[in-house]
Image (tube, rainbow, N blue to C red; front, side, top):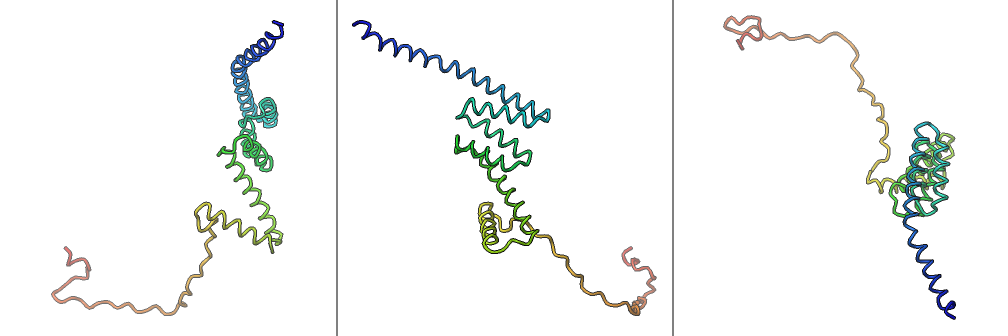
Length: 193
């Protein structure tokens, strides 16, 4: 009977003891996470981008609610001009923290670079017509409003045609003023002396 009454207390005490050891374990995982970021930075410095990504991916699996590995992977992919993967990693970071400005920046700029390349390819192939063209114009208008700019890309100055020069003909006669009275010399600066 006493055993039945004490058993719930023992379970509660064990649960509380488990909770008490939580922060110490969290502190060691924080150190481990910092080590992963240091190792990833070292791998990047050595030119081993894929190794850095695999280290950060392992960290994201070990700490699924942490946004830091995702933001760092997005930055690495962005720096390597792998915009599709940068967008994907930035979206993962934003799922964990919807207010992360760096993730939004990576997402926006990567998306613009992908869109710019696609539009340039379409323009080169002369297929930018119809709804695609109007959608591109709407996006450009949205960008102008967001940036507060009237023109997104300044146009190249149009080559101006110089006014036609008169055809060479006989040289016009130069009139020489008559000598001044009072014995002025031919020196035009003589009066200033």
